[in-house]
Image 1 (cartoon, rainbow, N blue to C red):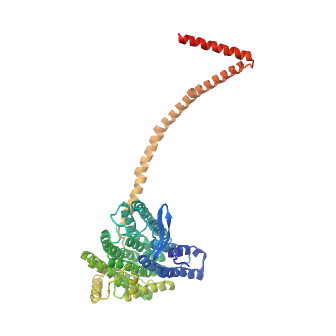
Image 2 (spheres, one colour; image 1 turned 90 degrees about the vertical axis):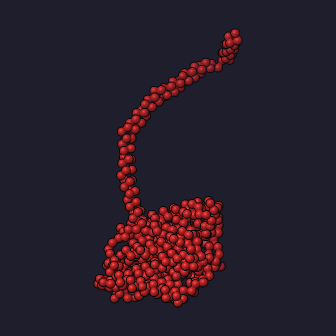
Image 3 (cartoon, helix red, strand yellow; image 1 turned 135 degrees about the vertical axis):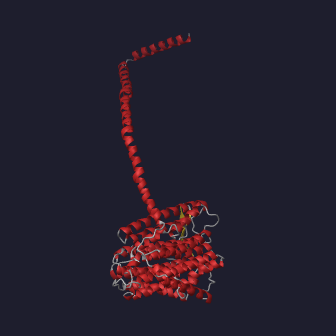
Length: 586
């Protein structure tokens, strides 16, 4: 009996038949694979699987514990929701890429060693890049190439850290990096932080996600950054640097969301902000903080996917994504509006929605750890999240000025997927105990206290009041925000200019000098050497050969075959030797 089925293999191997299936059979198969993966995760027991040796190092293909199970649970649930959302796609390419992408994320979650982790990590980057390339068009292709280059660079940094850490620790097993951080540990941390989109390593996310396909962006919003949260929780809990990086992230994403006009780019900045809560919780490192980061990752995957699905539905129907081009859609897309608002309430931490019972655990852990500044910053970020994702974006996208776009509800499968995600957002908010039971440590946190509910509602209502009072100031403008991607875009241009101008000119100058001076000199030297070879070396060799031939001929003539002749020659030789000896002796 098989006691462990790796869900990553279900997706990766399950991607192979997809191009060969058509119609209803393909749709049934696409839903079946993530359903089987959910069953595999829910029925697995803690333990280690696939241990072996490679290049003298211990390799562990799968390590199952509470931390990996909770991430695998939400990943497989999200895979099912995302697959349902994409069932209307006529071609197989995006389905194959999405399955490989999900399989890579699950492979990382269960990886027991750094080598296995790295292979799945890079597989994620390649598969997710396709979801941007598949959109087509110059903007998407450029963004996909930048996305791929950034992640390849991050992969090289991670691999270097793995090698150095492996030499230092004497093991490639994946676990907490204890003790003093060495060069390898810092490189591993940098590779993880890049995938977590920690500023200034965040611009790849807000650059690529808005350019992905409607369905691809939903998958991308769920897996890459949350996989990074998982590996940070596994390897770097209690790292003080993460507290402050996460706090900066939470505020950074909110501030940039103020400036955004593109609906998916605005949502992408709020991924940066929300992941900041998780990174800060991991940095605090207490049991409550790690539980808070893990539970918030679980809730975030579902409500952020719901928000991207809502924005994707609008793009699918209208072909527009800028807030300055949208408005008045509540009349023709009421179900989409209602389902989107569930996600908006969840991310804004409204009572009885999932964010309320997860995000508040991180803030409470910061307060319990006597970090007043962190509590203040995270609370401010929460208010900003409601302001832009819960109020600004839906107001200008669904309400506001009616642009007469003549929208309609999206395909039924998209609405079903949104409804499933919305149901999770509400069920987790009302009944958080099943989620708390999945967390790595026992939970001693009660979200529904009078003080907490009152404080949260007061914060949200004052935020709504501010939105109403300053509505005109929040009007979106058709501008482009400059983020840290400006540096590598301009840096790449500067590098190309340097390669095409100074370096190319230097190479041309060297070539000219070589052609006019060095090559003639070399040619003359070669000709002189040839003459010396022909007239000197060859002449001497040929003369010696002729002398040997003449001497050989003379000796051949002396060989008469008569014994008396040989005897006379020997006597003459003896007489000559005696004469020479006599002369020398005197």
